[in-house]
Length: 115
Length: 234
Image 1: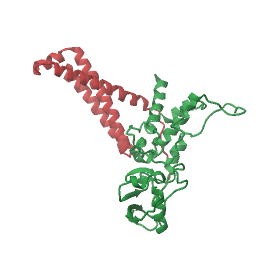
Image 2: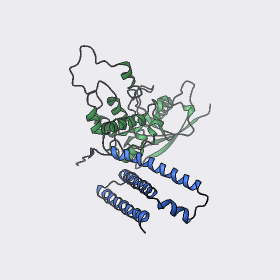
Image 3: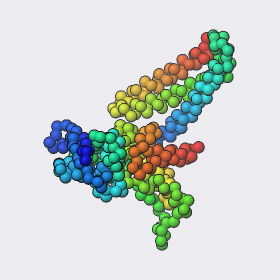
Image 4: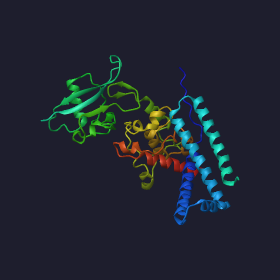
């Protein structure tokens, strides 16, 4: 039986690094949000719309979401690589995950800047 | 003297349809302190029990096994430190040949894949290739590995991908040569490891550090390999 183990695709370092950097970004955003929630006397519709009226906050939120999506991609891919053995099924799940994350990305632009 | 209770994993693929646990009770005399002493006394009673052992002092790494759910060396595990009945199983994640004897082929394949020897193309000097004491210090905590397999077989990433993930023991050895100032194959070694399976299956859960009978830290070594790779690209 031919049992050829294929490894050596020479990637992984960038993903590992991005996973760490994106985690830091999400922590920073979480602190920012917690700070805002603590500082605001009343958290009503007005307080939230006021916050998200600023393009800076929208951009920061979008950056956090990009970090979240990339982080999620690496995390989910790692789980799939661990547990899903047939390469074709693995590829299909990867494609599905990437497509849904791109969809979420478009959706978040719509939420942040859309009407 | 109260008897000490054991539950030992038994499996003889030539006779048994499935593995089973067999109970033993043993009266120990003073002087028999280590688990291996007890296992050898059990084997004296029941010579069908198979296990590996050699140096009986924690140097050869032959008697690595799963003791009460934790990998360790029977020869340096004190019986009094164990809860009864003492459950003994073979190292997890490797094929069982018989009873406590496992097939370590996959483990050593991964070890060989990192080229566990010094690569230096310069002509050998008259005496030896010297290192400064500081450079030599970097090898502490790496060269002591006895390749017992306790760490690698306690690593879930190795259980899921034993054919592709090098495992903590292999990666610790890989760093042992990356850290050696006399070695000239740093770039090739890093290239060989830069792979989502070979290196990056490590998710730093540190089971390896928890079980190492020599108190080594493969997780730290893996971190240092990643550091070297980051330094290479930034």
